[in-house]
Image (cartoon, rainbow, N blue to C red; front, side, top):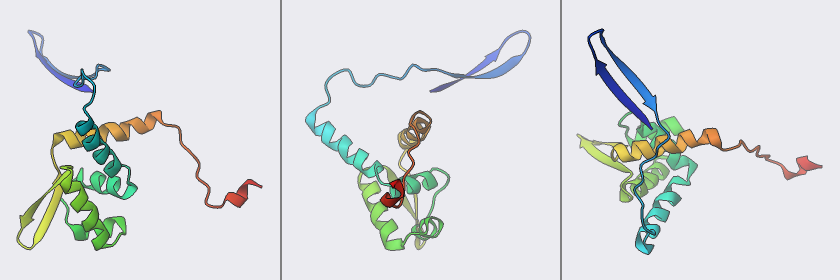
Length: 137
């Protein structure tokens, strides 16, 4: 987490950006069964590489299904289905502009969730995936 500190004194002013390791504590009791089910639904949605790429793209700008499809090289029907699920889970939202629907991340919480997940990659070892198991011989 980063904190921005603006300061002003008799010598001048400045801006400091400080990284802290203190994570906010939101959970102080056991996660309820209902909340665990809801969270598992969100985590399953995030377990799809295509959906993660969609979220990453929407992190940069509002985008239409056509643009997402072209940029990811995936069919529009597939993208629409993924976006429908992401909307259902309140991870993305859509706004109509004439004939086009523009998709964006739902709110700042989704931005932070995505940023934290991407930042966590620095702590996960890279795994080499082989296409052909016969290469082991």
